[in-house]
Length: 386
Ligand code: PHB
Image 1 (cartoon, helix red, strand yellow):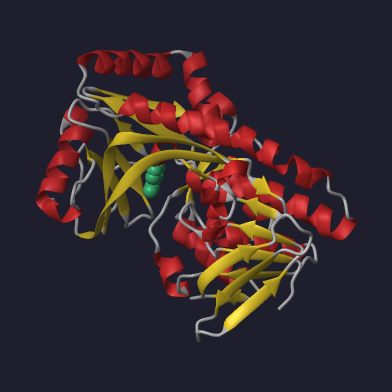
Image 2 (tube, rainbow, N blue to C red; image 1 turned 30 degrees about the vertical axis):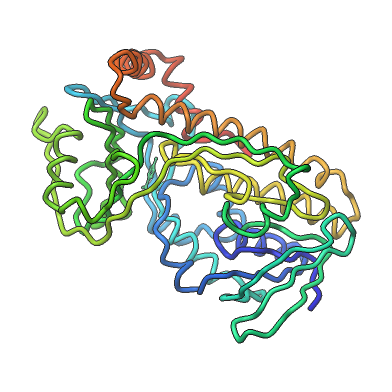
C-alpha cells in the first residue's frame, strides 16, 4: 500500500489529522491496534478549551458539540468553608465547553471518509530518516502489510510504537510522577453544580465534573496503588460529600448509581523533539499531562492543528518550512500546558505536609482574590489561541 501520510493511531489526534488532511486533498491511511468499539468507548477528558472548539467548528465538526455540549463561563475553586467562582469570560474573554472526548471521537468517526485499519498488530516504523519511510503491520486477518508514505504521523499515545521508534540518542525525555492518583466515577445523576468544582481539602483533592444533564463525572485524590474495587459506592459518595462541602451554605451533593469506577495515575511527560526525520509525533505520543488542568485532549488538538498545516505545506507545496518549525512551535504550547497542569496539580492535592498546605491555601486565596492571579489561571485554563 502507498499513501501520502501514514497515521499511527485512530484516537482523536489521528482521526482529526486525517480529517484535516483530507479537507486539503492530502491522502492518508490510519492504522490502529485496538478495535473501533474500544477506541470509541474509552472514558477520557470532558473539557474543550475555546480554541479547540473553534478549530473543530472550522473543520466542520462543531454541529453536535454546539447543540449538545455546554458552554461554561468558568469554574469554582474551593477549600473548606469557601467557594469562589472564576469567570474566564470576564477575566480572559474566553469560555470552555463541556463535551466528552467520547463524543468528539464519535463525531470524528462519523465525518471520516478515508481508510482506517483497526485491530492491526506488530506495527513497526522503518527508514524514518529517508524520504521513503514505511510502516509494517499485520492486518486483523493476520496478513503482513507494508504501508509506504511520504511522512508518518505518530498519534498512538505514550505506549505506542511511534515514540519508541526514535533512537535514544535522538530524543530527550522529561518526566515527573506524582505521589497520588485519581479515583474517577461516572454516575447516572444530574450534576449538583452548574460549573466544575475543583476542591482543595486536607484529606485530598476532589473534582465535580459532568458529561450531560443526567450524567456526572467526579474524582477523588487517592494514594498510588489504590484498587478501585476496594471503594464501595457509599464510601465514594461519603468522601466526595465531605471534600466537596456537602451541607455548607445550603449546598448538597446528590448521589446516584455509579456506572464506572477506575483509578487514573498522574504523570507529566514530554519527549523532545516532536520530530525525527520523516516521523512527526502528536498528542500523547509526545506528552502526557496530569488531568488537573483538563489539557490532554486540547493539547492533542493544538498539535494536530499545527501538524496538519505543516504536512499540507510539505506534501502539496513542497514547502518544508512549517514542518521544520513544527516541533519548536508545538513545544512552546506543550511546555506552557505542562507547567499549568503541574501548577494546578500541586496547588490542589494534599501532600500530608502542613507547610505545603499553608502555601496551597495562600495561593488559592491569591488566585481567587487578585485580578492578576485570577486572570493568569483563566488565560491558561480557557487556553491561548493556537
Ligand atoms: C472530566 O470531566 O473528566 C475532567 C474535567 C476537568 C478536569 C479533569 C477531568 O480537570
